[in-house]
Image (tube, rainbow, N blue to C red; front, side):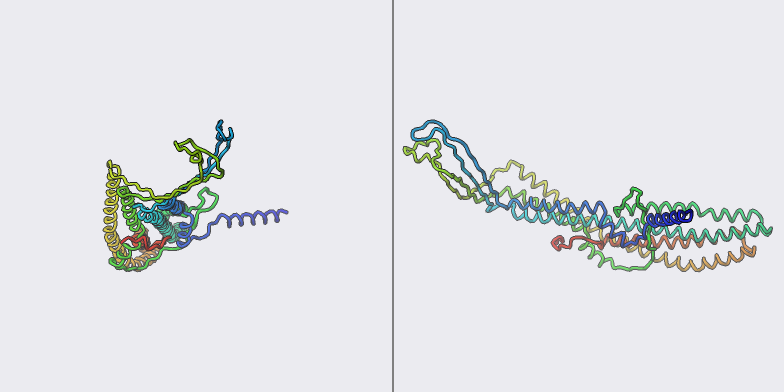
Length: 445
């Protein structure tokens, strides 16, 4: 019975361990989950649907207006030849269709632009969230790799500490050497603890960007990929041309300029006349219903009958009290401001790409120099370690050699991390992130 209970307890503990262990997370999976579940991206998707409804509002100016109604009552009173109480009812309707309205073409274009603006805002949300997810992923991977380097270094120092302890217990070394070796081993603990906190913070931020449940019921993701360095040269001029065509924020800025221009045209439409085709009529299901006499000597002229009227209505406001002119000037000012911002954004593109290019070149040079120094540092540590075992060198020399080796490895890891961040920034500036809409009408010449 005790064996069975112990076995059940062990199986339950194993099942619980499997349940709370998060699967390894790759960068591709993190980006996919960010696109699917990120709250900002989901909100931007809903804004696209709302923009479709607003497009209908813009287009409604060209659609006909129809009116249908029914009225009824009771006509009473004493009148020669008529009943004293006579109920009646009739239906009426009207139809108005704009024939000429200067705002109709601009309204149609404005409605289409509204949807494109919402799509580009969705693309901008995708770019921002994916870029943040990449930075968080690289930050977590960097700190985890630093932890691994520190742990390896700590194991080497622990082995020396154990050797010094054995020599001290054997009477071959002084107690100060043993204590110094132990202190040397403990010096890495604060840096490892700081790296662990940075790793947990990056993983938490990544989980938030992916829309994960942060209530504590599910474990945080564990990052799988390692940072890798690879030289990636690029042409600034070609990258600038591609960025001008692909970046979502530039497309959005161009669309805002177009939208302001169409708004200006819609407001200017008040200067022009409007012509509408109108059709109206009344349907009287029964005869004998009369209205007040209009002076005709014939009683039959007072009888109401069904009728249909058709024609055209013309309106033109020729006096402007400043309301239309002022609104047009305000919208023109907004358009010109958007044009200035657009030109500034376009001018910033080559500068940003040049900055990234120079940053990548500096990283490549430093990485090449440190790669050559890595072999020399490893040989130095091996030589000092052999001399320390034979008592030729001191703990201080070994400590300096180990610290130099760790700093070189850490610097190489940091350069790799900085290169990955620069490449993420390059994709953002180039507009290479995933975009939902691929409508060529978004690209304003």
